[in-house]
View 1 (cartoon, rainbow, N blue to C red):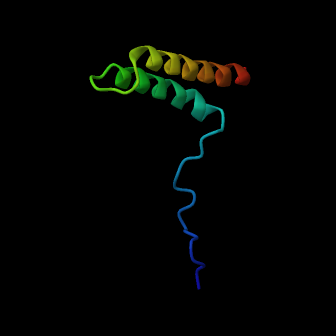
View 2 (cartoon, rainbow, N blue to C red):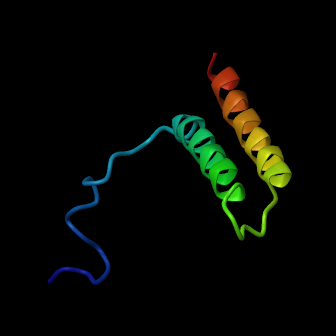
Length: 68
């Protein structure tokens, strides 16, 4: 009898190395934050959006530099 909560499909999702994902996701998030902060009615000002985006780009650079 199979145990509840355990699937046979655990290997379906690709495993992303820990440093590769932040390198890829932080720049994407930065672009989204900047774009959304420029939209009418945004609660985040364009200046705040740029500041947040710059921080996420710095995070991505740190992960890239750590790998060599």
